[in-house]
Image (cartoon, rainbow, N blue to C red):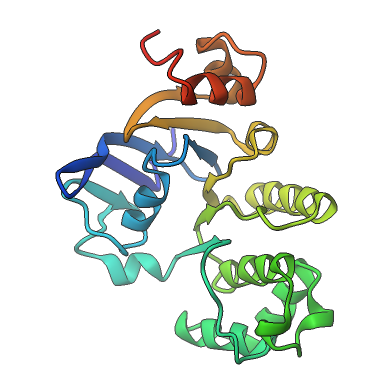
Length: 246
């Protein structure tokens, strides 16, 4: 059995006396895509922020690569990356210039070669000389995804990575993530409000409600637990507080 690459142990975050994340524990294993689901305000983004060191936990522990995250944060983050539809890129720079900045920040070797690789991977070579401020939301999403692969990460944190993509590009992105996961054994923690997407992509689901982890398992196991037809039905019922005590 492989050791987990991410361990979250009784993680809690309190804002203004409110427990936004309430004693959450879970693990992520090598080459696994884990879907982090829950209604708005469930604590998903706060957990991602704590895993990236953007927010300090009130209590609990995060271990990544079997190291305490608080103590070894810099070394750990060299092997981690993220993408979010809500993070801005340097608007005055071109796409290629932006990727050069991130490649430099991550200490990437053979930067030009790696930049060409990710531009090709996400089909954005044709916009590489365009300023970021001129791009559509879908194009910015793909640039963010390209940025997330610039350092060949072992762990990816993806916050609604396909939210602004058209159905064709979103489908290509899902297949690409699964392919890369299989080939490179990258571990991915993934949030989305697209339940069909989460059901298709995720090896395992973590379901949050009001800061607590209320279900974990394969998509089929979570659906079965709450007696739903699919994840979308389960999500709606949980959001409407009909199944929490079952």
